Image (tube, rainbow, N blue to C red; front, side, top):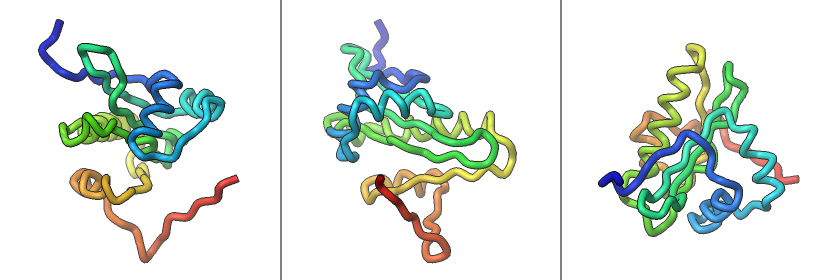
Length: 139
């Protein structure tokens, strides 16, 4: 057994863990049918498990077209595991995958809630307002 408390896996978490991570970390809750459709459509995904238990405690994924657009989504860390660098580890890995595989000039975007803004800024993300403004439509 390793002495590392956490292990990063290069896959999305299982559906039930994905739903739990979203809900317990403060992201909007989703249904299992939504998760089953969304997760296989990820361009890239990682999650972190607690080594001792195998329990998923953090995740993030990239959705995109593989050529120009790459959107960081579903960044989540369970409250009991926050402030230990897990969000940074997830984001670092996702950006490394984009840098390694995306064509030059790729556009990487995300929606930044207040708790994550400092993390994203440390990785070079800049606010786009007032030149552009995030917009959404819920169907």
